[in-house]
Amino acid sequence: MTPNHQHRPRVLVVGAGIAGLALAHALREQALDVTVAERDTQVRTTGAGLYLPANAVRALDRLGLGDAVVPHAHAIARQRLLDRRGRVLSQFALDEIWGTVGDCLSIGRRELHEALLSSLDPSLIRLGSAVTQADAEGNVTFEDGSSERYDLVVGADGVNSVVRRGVFGRTEPRFLQQVCWRFIARSAEIGPTADWTVRLGSAGRTLLTIPLGGERVYVYAETAGSTPQPPSGDWRARFADFTAPGAELLEQGADAYFAPLTEIDSSDWTRGRTVLVGDAAHACSPSMAQGGAMALEDAVVLAEVLGQAQTQGVGITGALATYQARRAGRIRWVLDQNHRRDKARGLPTPIRDLTLRVGGLRLFRANHAPLHAEP
Image 1 (tube, one colour):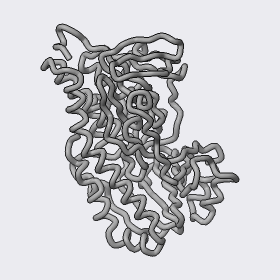
Image 2 (tube, one colour):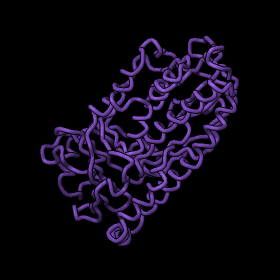
Image 3 (cartoon, helix red, strand yellow):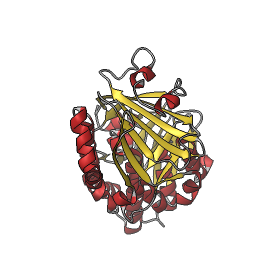
Image 4 (cartoon, helix red, strand yellow):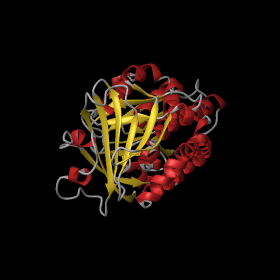
């Protein structure tokens, strides 16, 4: 990469999701020439909710996006782990987990997406521009048959990334034998001061409720699944034995968004003039709620190393090697902790409950301790 006064590198970000929009904003702040290619003809701002742990909020601040996002978010102060009958297994204040890293927030996906969109000039986003092929030299072919060459192509196009498949081979997502449903409900009973609360049943059944402010509640339901397709019948019957307010909330979930849970366990994210970020690089179980956080941290680190490379005259491949080295250990930690937490939730119910009663706070502290450090 040559210094900024000689050449402004052209960067194509493939995908206008959370990772792509946050990265595009950060790269513009580094004075790079950025275009976002989005396959849909409109940027989708639909979705359920999102929990932003403290390292995700810190990343938003470092990206210069905190002021755009925080007014639309809701502060979460505590976490509670209950059994399906509502009996407390463990509960603690989130500052006991995160210390001085910062606050934890919840936000509707629509609000987050719209806040990220507001940070970009709309002319930078090419809607209806599906990428059908990409190579490691920065060559991209679009669905309309046109081709362009970029100094850098960033695959931010999600778990089924076209960029990953074209450049990095067929690293397919691994189904985690878990499926989930997500939706936003309304509940005057839960209210805006409620905690992040998860209810744990047998057979991997999990019902998570997170207040979004006002009477809005993000509801996440998960259970074991033998296939990545929606099971037959009304999925809510699987949680019929969960006590209130679960039953009342589930009544509002007829049109919940269904998804199989998948993982991409690979450390191969950079090749030539191509790099992967977010779920395209390292999709993971939502057990630690770190998927969005890792995507935002990817944007922080990638923008930083590219900005440094631009001022120092370092080549693209050198900058990407630095990015890879800085992210590999942290992503590996999150994947491993997700595996441990998912395995613990699958223990026989009496053992799982005893483990959480005796050591819940200690386990959560250990899970998150390395994430206190800057990415």
